[in-house]
Image 1 (spheres, one colour):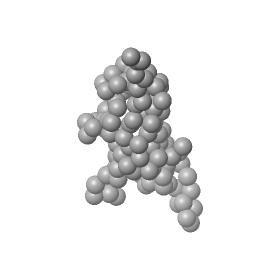
Image 2 (image 1 turned 60 degrees about the vertical axis):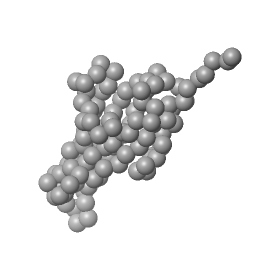
Image 3 (image 1 turned 90 degrees about the vertical axis):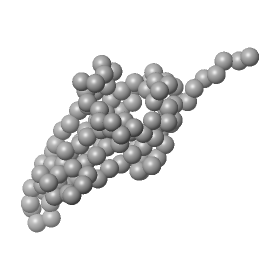
Length: 115
């Protein structure tokens, strides 16, 4: 399901694996996609439970020109600290003065014990 900028992504249970997907279409060249958590850049090297993949696909634009779609998938396991965290995908290429960004907020639902 696609989320819009500012959406809250509700996670039914902590310790569930999430895949956040970011796509930038019809670039020339393909966009570079970067993930941030609360404004800090993420990479697959940061955490054993975090994986970042990046791929491109060549497409034809109007008039037959070759363009490239870019996709990045951020895979991680949600924990309590992810509740209310902001995840941002930033797309950049040489045609842009500044990156286009989309941000979602996680809502990790918690189970509370009975009294």
